[in-house]
Image (cartoon, rainbow, N blue to C red):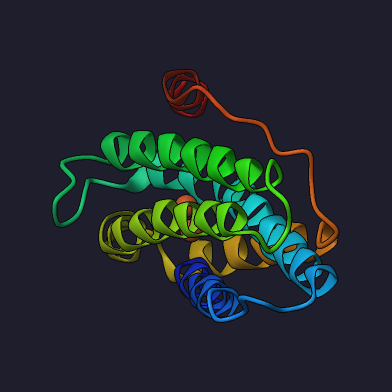
Length: 171
Ligand SMILES: [Fe+2]
Ligand SMILES: [Fe+2]
């Protein structure tokens, strides 16, 4: 197993689910609500699992990749993006399920998440493949998936301060 491939594969699941949801205008609100609840859980657990089992190790071995100069830059961007994605996903719940406003909020979450995933793939995942051992990538993949599927029903996701996060994991 490889943490960089596990994350990439989960990104594709997220893309597929957003793409499908955006084709579901007019569907039964109960179906939309159930679909969105699962997608929202996946967004929250995915980000939390990365913050537990990927970024701390990236901070140890990363050197920056493509348009990022350092692992600290990659991590700061990720923590801040994860906060924006959580906030955008939480905002969906403020609208009537299936309304134009609800779909617009879903779309905003898709935009935040898509922009983040592209950057994460190009910078952090590339950096980690270049600098982490296959053994470490394997062990982190198993831990990531254990957390991911051990919390498939969702978590109480909280925003984080990027500076504090980096200080904690580089001390
Ligand atoms: Fe991420
Ligand atoms: Fe991700």
